[in-house]
Image (cartoon, rainbow, N blue to C red; front, side, top):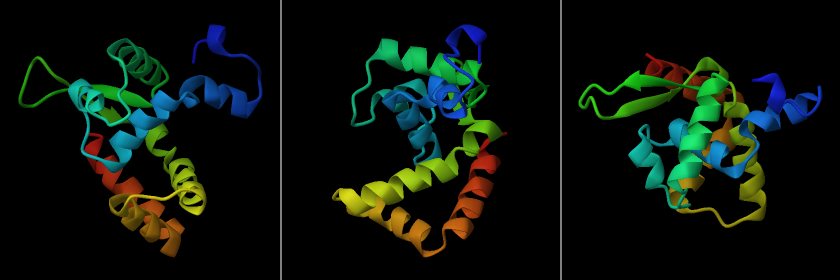
Length: 138
C-alpha cells in the first residue's frame, strides 16, 4: 500500500484503506464464491458497479497484491483476475460477514447452503475453500 493512502498505523485503518469500501469486498466475494473472474463478469454482478469504480477498485486491489492479472486463455482482449494468497487470507473475514448477515438478514437459498457449510465446521470449510482458491491462483 502506498504511504500516501495510509491514514494511520492502526491495523484496522490500514486494512480498510485497501478493501474497506463496499465495491472491493464485493469483487473479492465474487472471486471467492463465484466463477466471476473478468472485468465483464464483475460488471454483471447484481449490485451494478459503475465501470470507472470497477477499474479503480481493481487497480487498488492489484496494487496492494490482493488480486493479480493473468492472461485469458481464450481471448487476448480479456484479462483474468485471481486472488493472491493475500486475497485468499481474507476468506475467514468474509465467512464471518456471511455468518453475521445470516443472523440479521434473510439470505437467498443458494447462499444459505454455503453459509450452513461454514456454520457446521468453520475451520474445515475455510481450509477447503482456501485450498480450492489456491488451485485457481496459477
